Structures are given as C-alpha cells and as structure tokens.
Length: 605
Image (cartoon, rainbow, N blue to C red; front, side):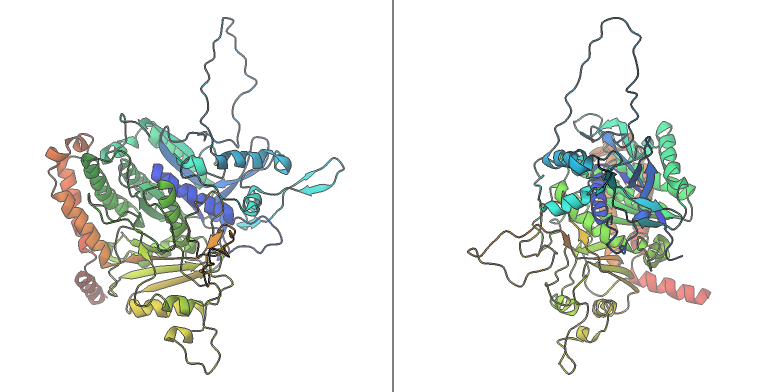
C-alpha cells in the first residue's frame, strides 16, 4: 500500500489564501518530472494533480483544486480557465436590426504572463495538445509516466517538444513583479480546471461597498445555490479519487472568509467523515484600508474562525508572518537570509508557501510517508486541535558542509522562526512535534570526521541524518513525542518566485564560503532551489496565544465598538459562548492539565 496514491483535494478560500496557493502550485509545477532520463521523485504528484481530457481529446494535468474568491479578483484569468474552450464560436443571431457592440479592453498582462503566453504559443510549444503542466498518469498504479511530448515534422521525423517548465528553468531569467502583481492570477503559471475557480459575486474584492468583512457574512454565504455549487465541485473531484485521504484547506482568517471556512470545514466533516481535514488559517501582515474598526473585525474573525475551524478539522494551524492576532501585534517575522518585505502580499505569501510545501511533504511521499490522519493524530491529543508552525526559510547550510556543523552553528538558539504568530517558548515544553527537513541532496548528513578525530559535538557521532536531527531536537525537547522526516529534494523556486534571497546564497540555496569582493564580483545565476526546515508543534505556547486572543475579544463591548459586526450575526450570546469555548481550548494546553489527563487515562486503563 506504500506505493498507492492517496489523493488530496485542496480548497483555497479567500484572496490571501489564493496568493499562498498560487505560489504553492507554482512550486508543485516546478517539481514535476517530464524527462524519462530523470529518476522518479520522492513526492508523488498524483496526490495533488489529476489527469483529464480536453474537449478535443488532449491530455491535461491540473490541480485537484477548488479556489474561491470575490468579484473583481481574477483580472486576466478567466473563471472557466482556458484549457476547455466552451464558447460556441459558430452561434448565429436571428435579430435583423442594428447591433452595437461595446467591448471592454482586457487588463494588461505583466511581463511574466506575456512571456508565458509566448512560450506556450511560439515555436515548438505551439503543439495543440500542450498544456502548461501536462503529463500522462496511470491511475491504476498511481504513478506518473514520464513522457517527452513530441510532434511530427513535415519529413515525418519526431521532434522533442520542450516543456514550459524546462524553458523557464533554462532561461535563467528573473522577473521583478513587485510593482505589477495586484491579484494572485498575475503570477499563476499553471492551467486550472474549469471547475476549480468560483467567484462570489455578492461581494467585491476592491472598493468600499459590498465587502466581505465580518464572520457572520461568511457563514451566511454557504446557503442555497452557493452550497449546491460547492457540493457539485467537491463531488466532481472526490468521486474520481481511488483512495481519498482527505482535504487541505487554506482559508483567510481575518475577514469574512473565516465564517465561510467554518461552514465549509463543517460540511467536509459531515459529508466525508473519517477523511483528514488539515486546515491552515492564513493572514497577511497588513490589510488595505486598515482602520481601528477593521482591526476589531480582524481580531474577532480570527478568534471565531480559529475555534470553529479547529472544531471541524483534524487540526487547525494559523499561518502568517504577522506578529500576532491582537490589534497591536509584535513586529512581523523576519528571516536572516531573506530580503523580504513582509507587508507585500507577493513576498509574504511566497515564504509561507515554501514552509507549507515542506510541512505537507509527509502525506505526499511516494514511499514511506505518513497519511494525513497520522500527522494529525500525533499532534492533537486530548482536544488540542490547534497547532503552531515554525520555519527556517532557507535552512542555513554551508555549501560543502555537514548537517551536524549546521545545527551546531545555531548554538543555543533554535534554527526556526514562528510562522503562526506564536513565539517559541524555547524552554523544552512541548506536547508533540513533527519536523521536516528537505533539500540536502548532495550534502553530508553526517560528520565526515576521520576515525580517531575528536568530534566537535555529540551530533558528529550520529550515523544518519535522521539520527543527527533527532539528537539535536532531543537536546532542546527531552521528553517530547517527536516525528522526524528528511527529504533529499529541495523546493524549486523557478520563475515567477520573487527574488528575495540573500546574495550570500549559492544558486542551490546554500551559504557560500565567502562573499566576493566588489572588484571580483560577477553576477551569479538566480537561486533556483533551497533547503527548508519546518516544525509543527502542539505546545503550551498555543494555549498562551489563544488565551490572549480570548481575553482581548471578551473585553470588547461589541454593541458599542462594533455594532455592525453583530448585525450580520452571530448574536452577542453566541459570541460570549464562543469566547468561553476558546478559553477552554487554551486551558487544554496547560501542562498540569495534560499530566492530570494522562494520569486519569492510566487509571481508566
């Protein structure tokens, strides 16, 4: 069963979720293998992608994805996509009178999208059955058959058609899209299935009127036609799965999508019981047109969404570079090897997508992986269904160095930074942890010291990469249940991933031995891949975070400071009850309660 494909359906609910999701799918697309001379990768793409046929019978390979956003959020992207042309070009009009046509100018595409169109339509890439991401998949075995697409020339010879992936990687070109990215489709490099994108037309993405700002507005959305539409889309993707392991849900946490996501996860739990539901509540560092009133809305949405989505999911993990969910948070998370503007959605979402790509690798492995339910069960004992995430993006590994040296260089400090607005306590208190390190292919995972040489530390005595990382973590968390996963493959950050990396990094993402002087400096190729280390934790830090959020929300007189929030629902009594439930959730993370619960379980046994 280790080689079977355990399919996952992804849902992206909200604009920032789709920013992260776009980077995420670009990363997955860059990792697809087409060359038959290359070995099969560690990650199984069929877990996330599906094979289909266009109306002309051409093979497509598209994400198993449902993406929801608001009116005006797509710009150059058609809601139905461009793979399946459903327009009736042969239709005729019976009206014999005068006809006046008003045509709106299409939005201008940025440099990346224009060149992407040229790559698909020009030269050898003009083959009619080519798609931005295309492959052949044997669903019976769940493996991807690596093919090089060909077309026949006039002389009858077979000529290889280079994929867009290969062209983008070989071009060694960087795109600076910071000034041109307005919405997530401005840097989407893959085709989506016609059933993937759904637009909520009741609310606007831009402007002052008809905004989806309150939790109750989102809850009310999933009724009537909207519910039928979502169920139809779910059934389409689910029913073609041979072995559905579950759903990964990215949901905007600070706006009205928080309420919508609460209802969606409830629907998934009720309709697909027994499947994994891993929910990531995402939030940007800043919001457009911020105000004191909107700050109250954001805090309430985060509190209510965390509680409800945690109740309905296998686990719930906040994902943000924001310093906290209160109205006056700490400074945003910074990474020492990134030159990143955390207030720019295009930047911050790319960092979170890299971390998410690493954290979710365990249930996407071709062999030896842990399915969703194992990951969630390891972290959510005794009702602690909210977990926190930490990342080292990139992991500071010296080119030509070894893993023990890299971990020793961290000294007493942990190598990661918080990406859940939940600071690491760094005192060894943790109730469960899942750590993933990927991207050290070709690097030494163990010490290369010769026999008889005095080891610099005990880590240099370990004989495998897993043992090195486990020993390091045990030194910081002596009694924590621990799961460790190492992957050799790195995350490929090919265009249009933003160029936010330190010049001290090599094109493979490793620290270079020395920085060249100004006189000797020659531009190096753009960075194309990098190692990443992540940790998912269930710890008392989560309880402290939820307790602070609960106290701040409970102290508000909503009838006075945010009456419009209540006008959309829920009722004041329901908010008060939710705050009490959030207080109980925070109490679950107290170590004294955890130990007493374990003692009670032992007595019951």
